[in-house]
Image (cartoon, rainbow, N blue to C red; front, side, top):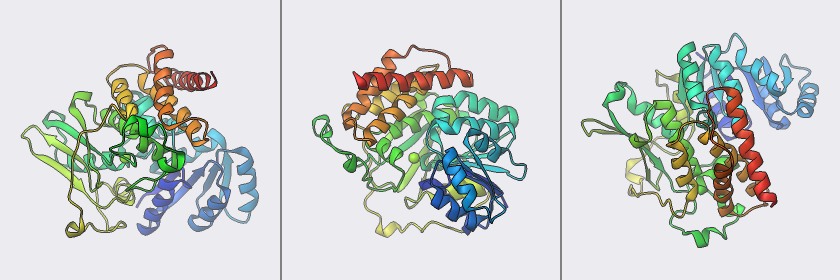
Length: 382
Ligand code: MG
C-alpha cells in the first residue's frame, strides 16, 4: 500500500494517475498543480490529501479560501513543491509535471530516498547524470512511467545484467504527420499538430510527438535511465502503438511489451512494482489488432529528431540546451507566434549559439536551460 505525492495532478498524466490510485485504493498525501483551481478543489475533496500546492501564488490564495472547510493545508511555489515531496508519510513521488520545473522536487525526493515514479522526461534529459548518481547515492528507485521506458523496464525484469543487453528498441507512433515531407509540414497548423492518432495527452507532449522531438527526448531518457550509449538504442516507427518498446539481448532474443495505448497501465506498474495488480486499463484483443508495421524514422522531414540524436551523442549541457530551447519554441508555437517547422529552426539556432558547457551541477543545468530559452526568444524577435 503506497502513500503518494502527485506532482502535476490536474494534467493528463495526473488525472489518469488519480484514476489508478483510486482503483488500487492507494492514498494521496499531496497533490500539486500550476493554477487549475477548480479541478484541484475537486481533487482535494475527493482524495483528502494533507497538502495541496498551487505553483501560482494567486491561485494558491484562491484555493486556500475554497478548501478552508477541509483539513488540507495549501501552499504555493517551489517551497510548496519541495514540502510535497518531503512529507514523512510519502513513500512514492509521482512526477507528472511538464518541463524543467520537475527537476528540483525530483532531486529533493531522491535525497529522502523515496521511490520516484517518473513521468517527467525533461528531468532526465537535462540532468540525467546528476539524477541517476544521486538516486544511486540515496538508494532511491526510479521507475519510469513513460510508456516506452516502462515497456523496456518490464522487458528487463529477470534480465538485469547490462552486458546481456544488445539493444533497446524504442517504438514511435510517427505522430499525426507521418509520411509528410518538409514542404507540406511548413503549412500545418496548431490544430493539426494537436491531433494525435493514438494517444490523448497534454498540449506540449502532443506537439513534441508531432515534431518527433518527443522520441528524441525519450532516446536521451532511455540512455540515462538504462546507462547505455547511443549506439545501443534504436528507434522504429510502429504506427499502431501496440508494442510499446522492445529489448534485444545478446542471444538475439527480442522481448516486447504489448498492450492497449492507455497510460494507466505504465502508471499502475510504476506504483505497484514489483507486484502486478488487477487491471485498470482494458485488455488487448489480438484478433482485433490491425497488422503491426515497422519502419525507419524520417530524419530529413523531422529535423527535431535529428537534432536530439546529435545532442544525445555529446557530453555536457547539450541535452539541457536542446530541451530548454524546445520548451520555449513549443510555447511560441502553441501561442500561434511561429510555424511548425520554425520549432526545429529555433532549437538548432539555440544549439549553435549557446556555448558548450558542463552539466554536472544543478546550477550549470539551470544556466544552460535559461541560456537556451533566451537564445530562442532573441532569435524569434529578430
Ligand atoms: Mg512516451
